[in-house]
Length: 92
Length: 183
Image (tube, rainbow over all chains, first blue to last red; front, top):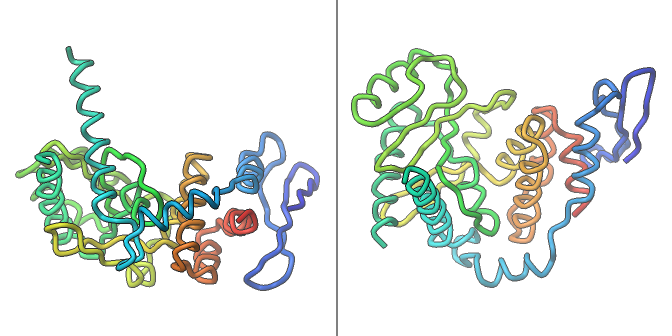
């Protein structure tokens, strides 16, 4: 990833794996450029291979190759329940 | 669990209601993301629908508000909240996202408990939607996009070429390319 400042404007050049060539993207004004910060953050993001292995072995339904639906529903029921508890205690 | 039964009952009502007015709906947000990556707790279920059709939206609001709590009640918003059996369902059309017929055709239809099926945005389209919303909401939505890409690739369920094409159409290709390069 290569940033370029031209006058007051910022650009980034990335390898476009769709067209197999470098490509320059316009990011906006260079002062306080949030998009550049977001791109830097995106470059740092990693998912731990151990967590991926654990997900495939324990949380994925081999029949659908999606997350087990009981876990998906549980995540919502627990979230809604916790929110309900917190609003109830605030009301008290 | 009683809460779980109540949720299925609420979701069945919500899906039936939304489908009647917006047959093109797709589930999005964290509830949809949880089908493609390790589940995280969430408070609500988000429906992506075409809120730009004001006539249909007005009819929906009139019908839904007679049965459930709905807000706001006037047209022209990008988000509407619907409460059924104390569960919250949001109808949304995020700004800057192009919900086109190709995206609708690629929805996943998933059987969910006693509900016959629900439609979920495909992993590629959901990741693009998170990239679009990260422009406003920042890093937390970028992380969700990354999770969907990484875990879906691990499941052998991610079309990179389609993802890049849709990212380009939605003007977030730079983010998509950077996410893919950090895998």
